Amino acid sequence: MIAAILSAATLAVPAAESECPAVTTAQVEAQFQRFADAWTTRDPDAVTALFTREPVLLATVSNTPRTTPAAVRDYFVGFLRGAPVGRIDTSTVEVDCRTATRVGTWTVTLTDPTSGAKTDVKARYSFVYRWEEGDWKIDHLHSSKMPE
Image (cartoon, rainbow, N blue to C red; front, side, top):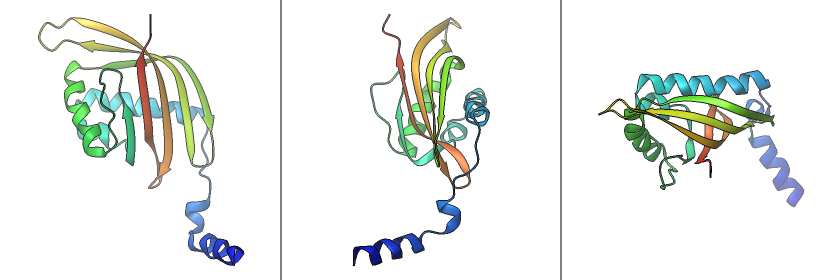
């Protein structure tokens, strides 16, 4: 009985959904540039479009976990006012079938909209990308300030 259920479940998955998309480390690394480019637009919708349908955002400068596209967008409405510019400092990439991770350290430069003063925020990050709707999307992003 269990074998019949498993067999039926396997048959119900279209072949395209069960195949692993080809991806290289360089392509995973390039996902960050897409993210950084979306920041430069200062358009929260452009940034939010890079996330999956069921994202997790644990942002550097917020204590609130964001687990819906609307909540992710809400975070970026405020965050993008600081004209953020991100730079990867260290990076480790791992690729699996339909997921890829990039972890390391980065520096995010924020500009105070009133004074124009720039502040560098040094942080640790982890991006988990998931293959969704024919594209690599951010499924989970966690960034936390360095403890120094």
